[in-house]
Image (cartoon, rainbow, N blue to C red; front, side):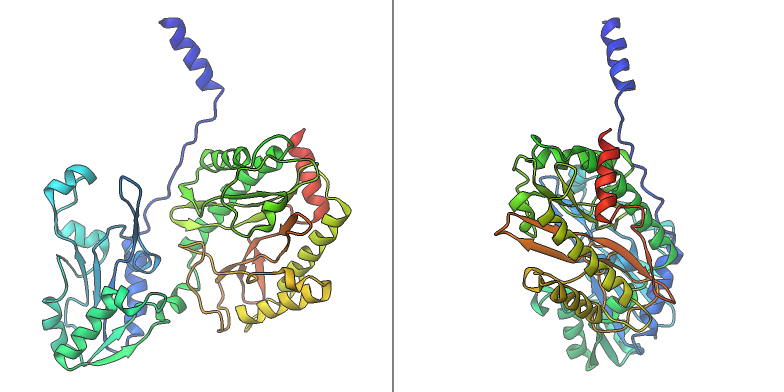
Length: 422
């Protein structure tokens, strides 16, 4: 028995144990300041927002939608946030679903409403149940209701939009639509958000380092996936930003390949689109790796065209530019290279609490907006695809490359793989 204990200890000493270290919760003052910015933009109207998160798995794991989370930091279903800028005292009320002792035996106990809970959430009042009755009193101090629920969901799917409309009709209030309000406010990130995203990117770098070593002939796409995801969690990831995509050879020409079943062969290139999440904030990185360690002449030609498209997009980032402008720059570059028809997606997207985060694509980009630059060329007839995806943050004079520690040039990728395999 003692020998088994010593043997187990020896194995444990040689095994790198993932030790996720989630960041501390953001202070209540952060969420309070965000809600104040929203209220200033409501023109004196009542604002109502409901939790729209999703449940998954047999344990019904809940992931809050990013809008509600950004305003509250609460990961709980059935909640409502009511903003009443003209109320004399309770301008911000949080409504939580009623407690259920039987259900809590399965999911864990929930806290009773108390002054400590109110202070933790940074709101004026916490209640349970629907806000329907409370809106009767709130409606007396306001003459309008703002629908702030984003338009990404149909009205009949948004209980908050429906409640706002019903409240306006019931009390004879004007309805004001501010569907883009939250997207505009969330687009520019505060230092505490940027810090989490930079940490997610650093963790993602560790995973791609494992990929540079693992993409060898004879292993499967799933083998590569398990290596990179283990490296993510070993480096402190608190989750995955999205399901990892590992596409070798012809699978790399499928944009959202999810089978990860092919065995890698010499001569393949492998498109790896995978990133870690840290403290709910996402990263998003893609690299294309040659299994042999070197790109063939045909693969190199395509890779250089994608790299040049990235360079052309970077050169176009400046104050006043929009995501739509940058899409035009991407298309112009790939048109010059003769590959426009093989570029089948947008050049990039906003990143934040979600990997495809909120933002306004037709408006000038604000300082501290974070987005991807990810041109790609997909050639199923030749049996491969190439994508290079990086993240940038907008600065007062241009941009900063957040993923600068990831090799990007063709020669640097080859050297990276050679070093990783030594």
